Length: 140
Image 1 (spheres, helix red, strand yellow):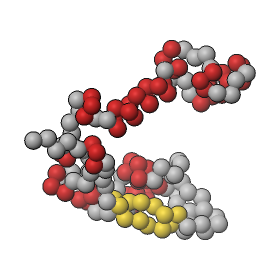
Image 2 (cartoon, rainbow, N blue to C red; image 1 turned 90 degrees about the vertical axis):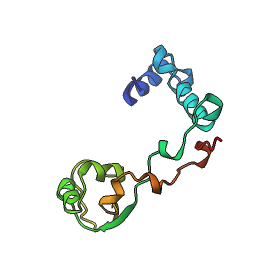
Image 3 (tube, helix red, strand yellow; image 1 turned 180 degrees about the vertical axis):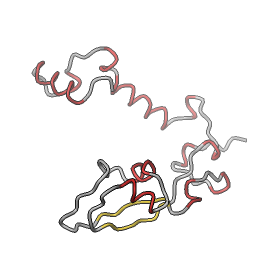
Image 4 (cartoon, rainbow, N blue to C red; image 1 turned 180 degrees about the horizontal axis):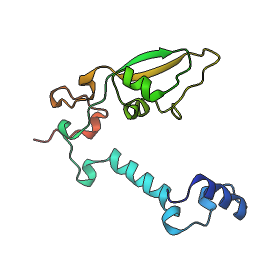
């Protein structure tokens, strides 16, 4: 959060502990895990905390198509444009992509997810698919 991986690793070594919960950290950082757990709890019990969501409050999942790449990619930006999407959309769908190039001298097969079509990125309230049905309140 406000202490990167290096700071936590250094603090673990300096304080000679091997557990986050044994670390002496500033107040904000030391509360981070508990805040994540609290958010998770609230998301699992939305109505108990006064959150009543309808289908139209949720994002629609994006439909993807898959393309297999078996050679080097000189530029993911150019690859994305050739496939009809942006570099941002490509990266968001393929978190494994690091940087802007793929060196693939071994010919390994990579599966790349791309938006299925132009409409895949457009919001259509009539065709919502709920990610987690418990989030929906069917109040009368």
